[in-house]
Image 1 (cartoon, helix red, strand yellow):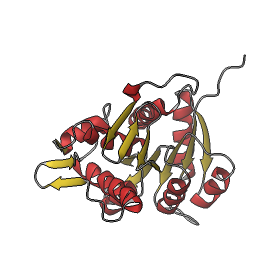
Image 2 (spheres, one colour):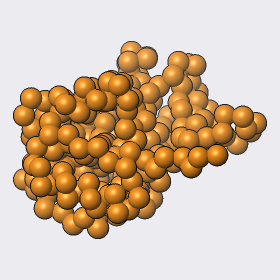
Image 3 (tube, one colour):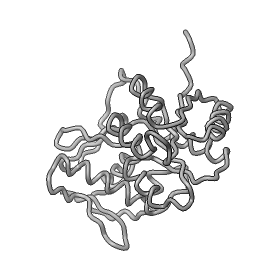
Length: 239
């Protein structure tokens, strides 16, 4: 039996030197890589076959990283996305997270840190790869009111309608659902969503909460099941 292929990482950046440097570093870590000079060329390739993880710059010709992220998230919430961004692009970093990116890394960055973050993203996404033949246990499911979470498959449903969540969004919602009616601080949610990463800020949680609320509002108009307690954190209503 042939060995399974290693994960494929797509690197999308208009700087050729950066593309090749990142590609070499990740290949040394055992990943396969594919490089693209802009979002348009990458999206054309992704339309045929999705990579396992995407690293993309924000400012690129033809199609920028924000538009490529929008298209990726419209097609799949399971592919981890990491943005590369300049230190003074706070607005773009926040917007990228609102669009569904799982992480961002400021330029200039160390290749060691980038490789570590890629490992973290794959670790967080790992539970999605499951054995479909395994028997399902009650411990794999968590229900709160109209919300149902499958912790083995990393899937969610609202009134039995699937909710497309990224890995990070699922972890945050699951953390809230485990203790409905109780306040979870931003620091607690950061620890749940990014258990192997200490680089994230509180604003990351705010961005992901907005996306989760938006997705649930699409299924139930006027959804208000996630409360903000200013100065404290967030709470999932228990009813």
